[in-house]
Length: 231
Image 1 (tube, rainbow, N blue to C red):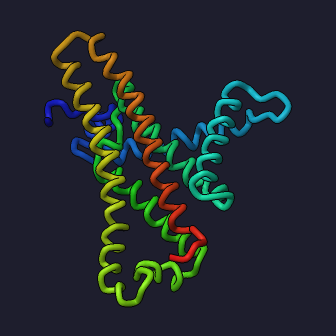
Image 2: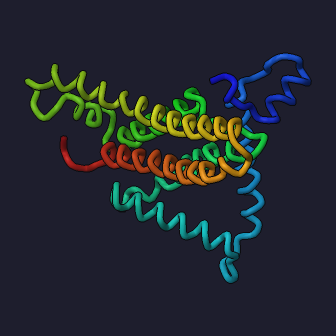
Image 3: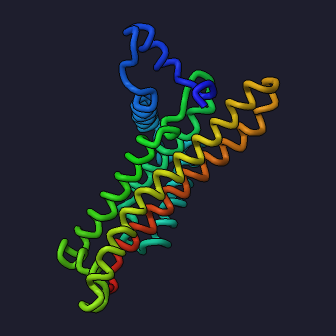
């Protein structure tokens, strides 16, 4: 497995310059993607036009509308304010997934530490929004179940259920992206250059799909946390 693992050129440059590993490669690439997206946002902000929107603006506006519709479908009209977190998380994971397909780069989401961090962000955010919507006492009360007599049984079940979401989100994303990169690297070592291309195209589809699944589950968890009905 170590022979199939590839590092980004930034990691190799830092390792050569300092003569030892400075920081893990997935952390380098995670920061790089964040800086890349921040730079793109600053560049694109100056090109937004109401009267004459460009093609890129139209595409991004369409994506925003789709996300808004998904938030309303999963949460209701109160879901629109969550667009910032859900959209940013989805875009960040998407770029992290796909950047490993670019030569001399690696996907930070091939590290479980990275995917665990994204899962913790989603977990903390939906619980925070649940507490904000209902108050801490009322929010955590639903962990006890509908009847007081069931509380000793329901409380550990609810706690395990919520923490298992962290495991599910992180392992699903990590496993799929790591597996795709491993297969592409193996094909690149065994066969000619053009043969792994179809697998790379599948990697693009998989990267988009995994980012979509991650934010869809985040929306579902948000919907359950801020739901107004009694538990």
